[in-house]
Length: 337
Image (cartoon, rainbow, N blue to C red):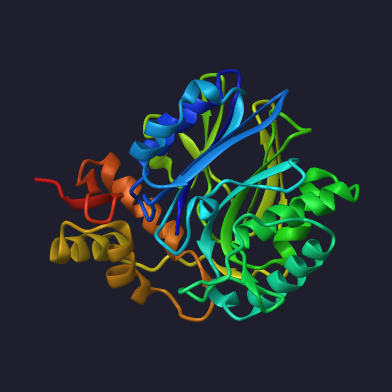
């Protein structure tokens, strides 16, 4: 799982993204870092394998102009800087960040992603994330020779549909319907400044109005002092400071949105038993057993919502710090004293 933020509005996007992103850097992420902004000159993207501390040593926020942009922090995994988000399409038209996992589609995405990836490669679309080896074995293997990050295939597929004449939201909807993941993806188009496009199966997408724009994130902890709205599961849409369009993503995504009773109690009991603990530990060891197996369900969304409510009420505390031996940022929780 990963964390991301998005912004569009009247202010420069980079400082807003950085402020919001650092608040959630250690939640299910903290190892790869990247940001992309958009202005009249096009997309400005910089990413690396490393934390925000590493990013700040190599890049400067003032070098990323524009009032629309995306920020991303990724969990561990195989690869170098090219495996970090954001991904930009090889034609320079689209940028994407995503978070989630294959989930119930663990077998199916390989086939779909390989089919689209090979088709695009044969049409001269290129994938900088391509590697000839992958110890994890989880990325699609194209032509039996090299594996490519799934999100880069999604980004180029969206750009391909857009290049064929599809409207941006139609291109996002078609790509994320035909390349199934239990994920949320955020997209910006070079030719459509000021607009953010999204698609989510059953992952968290929170939206809050900034004083002169819109901020989106996987967690409202990115903007703790603002009221927010949770975007619906199995949806896609376009969001700008002046407009919001939301539609159903796909009939193929059937999500069980039932929230088990006693979720908050189980969260606190699990945390008391293993504290300090990160969000993944609390979810895996305490909350997942409450949810049905083998179906799409809102376990991750419920984990975020419970954590956010307990933080706002002051019943738990969060601390984010660097883990030097792994060079990653980790947020841990404990019961408030």
